[in-house]
Image (cartoon, rainbow, N blue to C red; front, side):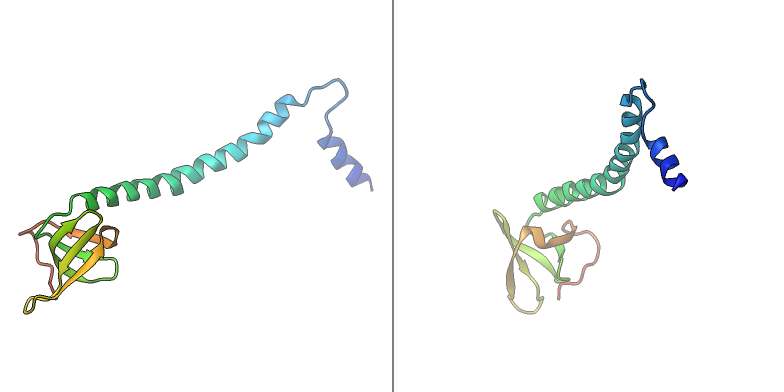
Amino acid sequence: MEILQTALGMAMPQEGAEGGGSMLIGLLPIAFLIFIMWLFLLRPQAQKQKEHQRLVASVEKNDRVVTAGGIHGVVANVEGDTVTLKIATNSDLRVKFNKGAISRLEKAGSGDVSEG
């Protein structure tokens, strides 16, 4: 019982003392955790999203791309938010995708990404 009274006595401010300073000190760990979460989780995710938006905006005809589903192809046409990919070299097989499905881009004439 004495342990409980001692613990309660430590938590309660002394008579005549103001608890404003201890409240501020109590909020510092929470603010620190929020800052760490922003620094390591939210900020990198926002940077990745901006990078992906730039990638999608730079897609042009004849670029070699890879979709999020792993389909390799060459951009045949770009219309608004959609892209038509030529995915087979021996035929005229074309598939229409949303631009957001593009995960990797290589500009025309750079590198070797297989087409089908």
